[in-house]
Length: 147
Image (tube, rainbow, N blue to C red):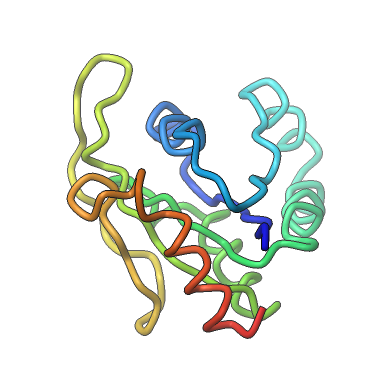
């Protein structure tokens, strides 16, 4: 069964690392649309309600929210909102630490705080072999949520 997955992350800081995860040829789930910087800026110009509407649209039909955790993700307002909405809507929820994926300059980042409430798993992309295991992590999260 294909799962629709919503990815939550700190766009400006982690978009390169996130693209590495999203483009890793993982099969078994449908990814939420990935907007570029110009599209995100347009959504933001519409104000808080515009952003909330966009998030709600992206969460529709999704089974699982995957929070891609970088060094500053836990402090991001909209990531916190996406986590809260995912829990309220009964979505599966996992975190994946992407801080040790090299960016476009070949640099890794500091490990950030886990933004998920206790009881939700946090995996590490590199050391937990995310390229191989993300599909099974998503499936487990969906099953735990009864989806």
